[in-house]
Length: 176
Image (cartoon, rainbow, N blue to C red; front, side):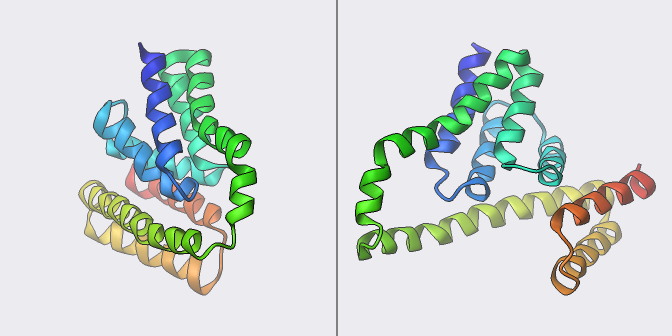
């Protein structure tokens, strides 16, 4: 039963997560935290942060980890396959069709209308992480880390992986 649940938990975000990883992350969060309860919101946030520090697609790393934790190597395989299966099927069946209509004004409007929805999903996820951080670490720590992260990312153009790694070290030293 766990293998079917793993498959559907990662296949559904892959099908409806138009736009890749950033669009799929809130959908995966809904499945593994809200629907199945495999992770708490804090655990999901930590897994997302760790996934961001490693190379490659975030959702596949999360699927491999969660699948392995719940079902061992077969669970990791099922979750990983479910993550890539929608893209694989779309590439096989729709690549020619998509190439034919890539310049269509209707297709361009459709993709433009999807972007605000993805932005809202990511905003809600960000708010949930902020509220969880505020609750766990306190107001001052959260404001400091958010401000330092903003400066490092925007003013000094530091790679996000280094910012996340720095926040992990900061948390281990000052918040543990």
